[in-house]
Structures are given as C-alpha cells and as structure tokens.
Length: 214
Image (cartoon, rainbow, N blue to C red; front, side):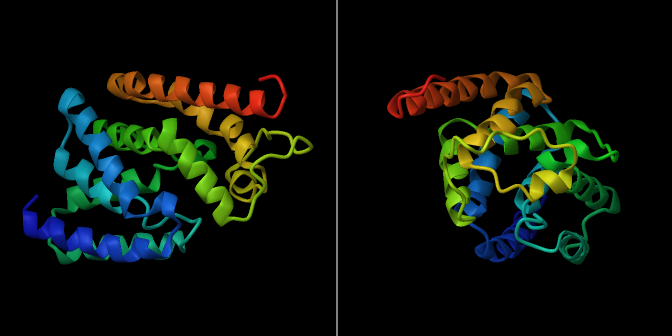
C-alpha cells in the first residue's frame, strides 16, 4: 500500500479513537501492529491487508461506537482512497469477525491475514499489557476490581458477555486466561505462552497478598 494512502487511513482512525479508553487507544493499535509484524515475518500473508485491518479494527468496537455505522464509514474511507474491491472486502471481513464476542456467532470467516490480525490483537490483551488494560477498562466502567461474592461467569452468548458487570479479576477467568489456547498461528501460540504464564504469576501474587489461595 502506498505510504500516503496509509497515512490518510491512519490519521482517520487516530481521530476516531480519541473517544475510547486508554486500553483501546492509538497506542493499542501501535502495539498490535508490532505484534502483527512479528507474526507476519514468520507466517507470511498479505501485509497490506494485515496493516489496514489492524489500523481500523477498533473503530467499530461496540463498547464505544455504533458498530454498523462505523463499518459503513470504514468502507467509505477505503473506497475514497481507491483500494481494490477485493482488498476492501477482505479488510472488512477481518474486522467484522475479529472480536472475542464473535466466539458466540454463527458467522465464521478465515484467512491467513485474519489469523495474524486476531492473534496480534489478542496478544495485546494478555501478559503485562493485558493486565494493565484490564484494570484500566474496569476503572473506566466503574467496576470492582475484586469482589469475592461475585463469581466468574460462563456466558452463553455475546449479549451476556458484553453486558456483564463482572469484576476485573473475574475477567481473567472469563476471557484473558482462555486466549492463549485460541491463538490461530504457530507464532501467535508461542508468543502467547510467556504472557499467559505471567498472568498466572500475577494472580498467584494477588491472592497471596489478600491471604487467599490461588
């Protein structure tokens, strides 16, 4: 992709993401780009599609935006810079199927580029950064970070997951500790393992400090 086209899309996405919390801001995008590059260099795939999908993937996040409205805006931006229809459709498909909440959807999509983008995004949800993001978002939503009377949930659909008022510590059991086993690429699995172990050590220390067993 030509650099000036990338710059147009990057600036557009950066402006949109000013409205989100610190865990989903532009620096999240930059970190996911780094992760995606590491995986792409080993796994291959079309970098232009991967890069575009990463730059735009959080713009339609339903936690902050009207998802369908933003998907239409994304498509228009990609049309405005005159990208091939096949590239536009591929990018839109990746974004539409990327999030953890899509685990409960019957709509499935797959491509090498999708796997790389999803793994890169999920890597930023685990490890030290994932811990920081979890507590940042919990604070943003005004949630307890720990309450022993509130137990982790097994969600049966995306609506239950999105509307959950669960604690941040519960979020580890409801999502974060599951992600390493859901990585799609060999490289993603390898990168996720160390971050997963770090989260387990964090939880051990957390429970030790409050006098409970892990």
